[in-house]
Image 1: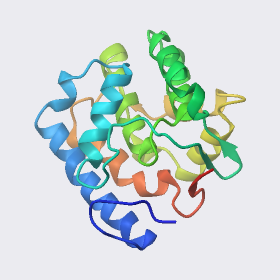
Image 2: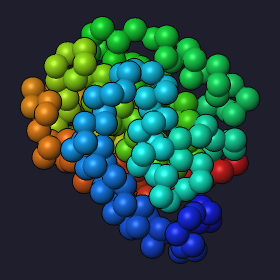
Image 3: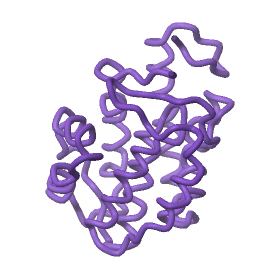
Image 4: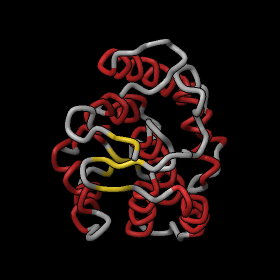
Length: 201
């Protein structure tokens, strides 16, 4: 099933390629214009603004909470009926230490508030919190994509793996464009188009 989109694309592979190309361009614009520095790190509003900016040229639902239940592989994300409350609770979570920040990131991934583009948006959101609180960001080129996918898949039960993985990739190059874009460059694989296709229930 191909999501309805503003581009009129009906082939899922073609849509994935167009989505990656456009979202990369928009992500770079966000960085170069200093847009991310205007957002309140750790809030759901900040995440929605990031998602809207990345995908507003592709989807009508950019920046809007999903109204359908979705799953990836055998994992079901937060049910729609509990999603709003879940997001309110996640926003209240502390973000003072590395462990707290990653725990908040894991919970946001479990919520998966959008129909598409959660991975890219949430990784930028994560780096925004790390930058504000710890003066660090993740160098995503140092994170193996298979290890990341497995760690994130297991994180709702045990988050030790994802913490170890991300801690080892922290860098103080918080204003480096190349470091920032590495996370976006890897986004096609991290979203898991071939491994874990998101499906509506």
